[in-house]
Length: 126
Image (cartoon, rainbow, N blue to C red; front, side, top):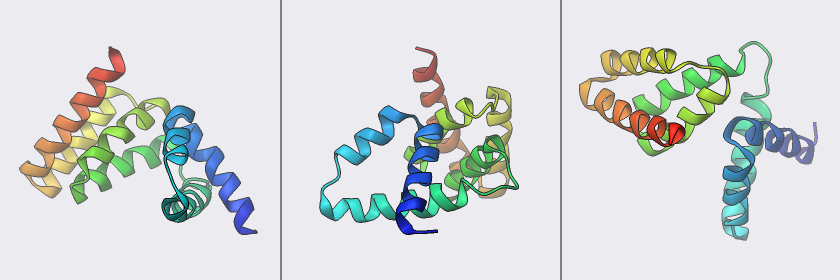
């Protein structure tokens, strides 16, 4: 598959998962230097990983919450809360993913993950 095909497939999936407004704002705010990153993440994460068969989007979303929480990427975790909801995950399923983060990554990571998720969920219902 040509790089441009991988980018286009990734861009479609990225917009589907994160929302057109969010993705388009990221792309519009990227100069030539930052477009190198945008292209890489769109092709690799979205065109390759998120577009693979084998796991549904909801499962990928919940796994991503666990990974981001475990790595301490709480600002990103907040973004992916909305993606998890859009993929069909329930608030209870998100809570359970956060419990796993708390148990396996420690209470400081769990607390920060719960706080980030709580903020994202509040803004989602406002």
